[in-house]
Length: 206
Image (tube, rainbow, N blue to C red; front, side, top):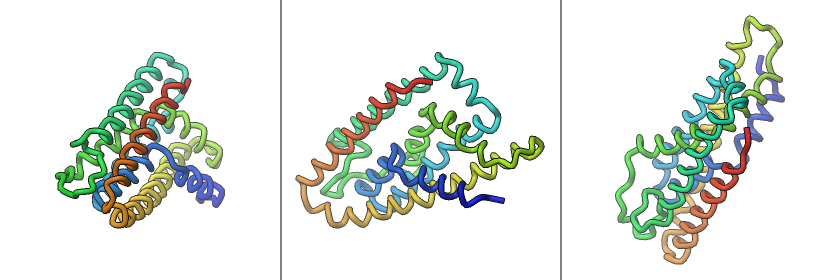
């Protein structure tokens, strides 16, 4: 049986603004609700490898392997800096465009970027290894099934909350698109946030 404590804990974790939330908001503002939904879907599926790692015990290996952790971490740092650059480029894929003339990205490409944001964050595997076990029944025979169920519920909550963030951003888009100054501010702000998140990830240790 799923405890209320787990649902509340998972909800608090999911609703806290992080890289996935920032990405979903940027797509909602830049390309509208459809793009935000694809972003939410991609970010959600980017959780799967980390849940599998936590369930199978691979997260412990990642935690003890400094080289493996560093490889994934620096790949994630580079990717976040790439996203920051995409916000600043005149024809960048993530740029919030006031003219509305830029060609929208295909949904699969938006989802792929969102998935990579989470896949390339090695701390997520260790996070799930710490988050899920306290809510297990303690029966070794059902531990894997319970971890899978809890992970699935976490993913559903993630998708639902991210969709709400994305829909809010797409509504705000209609109010903001009329100002070039606001668009420039938004692009620079999102770029700065992605760069700051890259810096924070660079300082993480296994």
